[in-house]
Image (cartoon, rainbow, N blue to C red; front, side, top):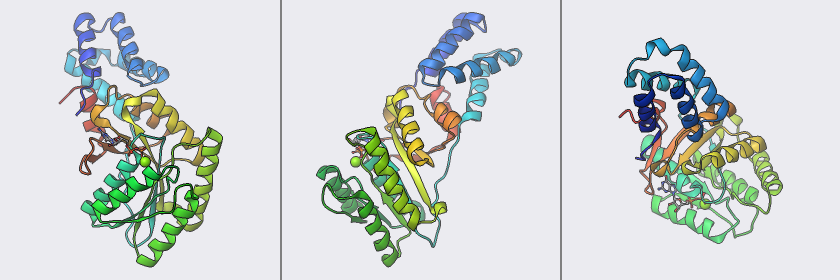
Length: 289
Ligand SMILES: Nc1nc2c(ncn2[C@@H]2O[C@H](COP(=O)(O)OP(=O)(O)O)[C@@H](O)[C@H]2O)c(=O)[nH]1
Ligand SMILES: [Mg+2]
């Protein structure tokens, strides 16, 4: 698990200043540095000031802050529906952990529900991306639908849907390329893929999941905004949580964009993957374990 500095730094500020004005100013800076966002940081300070009379000890402070933050966090347990074809489209920029997370998702649903996923090699940009998914498919003993490098990702996903229907698979997990020559091309490509899927899969069973690298802070937030604007996201996977430094980024994603967090990636093996748990998350971030 990562070592978050927010909790220890907050304890230091509190030990030095108690609940003075200096404390609240320093705390606000600290929250902003933790990627919580300026407006939200200010709101949190206002709420805590109102609760001042309830806060005597360090642990009162941590519990109060945890309660305030918990109000802003959304989580989701993405459970594929039995007996129908579900499709999870996995999005995100290059290198964040998409392909790895797809393998982890497939493994997770197999362990938890006995579901056999079928994987769609929709990142057709690089040969290595296709090979990487094929490699995971072999290790997990799950089918991967692929075409050649440079082929149309929409066609790959279309083929996968047709194939899943004939084999009665219940879950397709589709990879995508997170890189194009420019943003407009990427958005257009995503919208094309989205349309193909929407025509074939009931909206209730079609989920668009973005993977972000938890170590990238504000960059991760901007990525979520960009993809959400393009095709409307349903959930977030926080990859590389094991090396996450700050942790506040979850707050603006949930509070400003209203997108829930589904999973955290905690390492490089298939089992390093957990359902996102708000209470556990806040305990980690605030150093309350
Ligand atoms: N430590 C750690 N590394 C991860 C995690 N998820 C992915 N990675 C690594 O991040 C790198 C990029 O992952 P990849 O799945 O290829 O990213 P993609 O380009 O988005 O498909 C690889 O070296 C992965 O092993 C995670 O949860 N923790
Ligand atoms: Mg990849």
